[in-house]
Length: 95
Image (cartoon, rainbow, N blue to C red):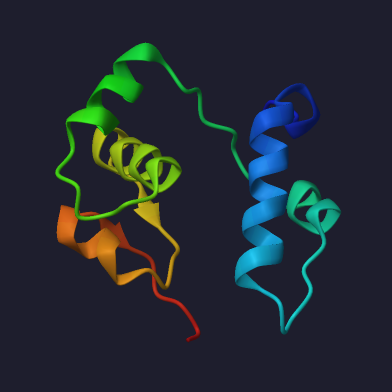
């Protein structure tokens, strides 16, 4: 497993997402980094796949996550309903 410290842009974006979407329940980035997450490689092929996706979702970072999920048959944990428009398998949330 790669460290998020070696991926400063990913860590910065993750921190922004955590703070933006979880204002009521502060989740520290260190707690996320300490959890057993696998850092996925962002390749040129993956970015091309994300760019070719229909524009159901406006956030380019989320389209990269969607492309990863489709490419690697991964489930995505999100409350964002737009992910379902791509046929991505969604993990259940505790709404």
